[in-house]
Length: 115
Image (tube, rainbow, N blue to C red; front, side, top):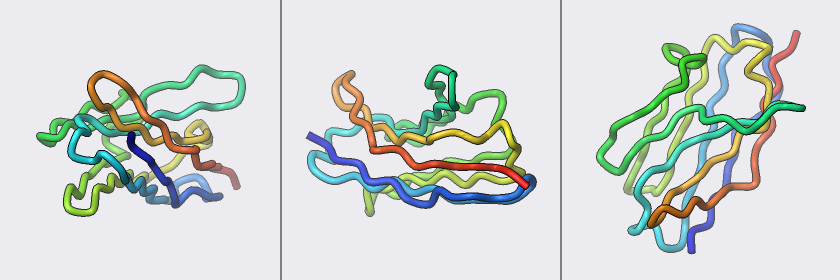
């Protein structure tokens, strides 16, 4: 079992920045990949970025160059630095952790980009 707690969402103006955090607890040594998905109103959940235990990353094209994921294994935490935010980035952002091909999910944190 893995528990995930997200923080850092909020309201930001276009062009602004936010940093999301996701702290894992429980069976953290079994975690392989971690990452972030997002879901906008009326849309399907989509992958934003993930990072393997070895540090390999996979970004969605829409965020490449603007978002950066990092992983602190000592703290069992992943971070998502989001820069140059756009209104279309508005969504609920969900952290996930993959253990033996099963995904655990956080509760989600709202990110709203609006002037």
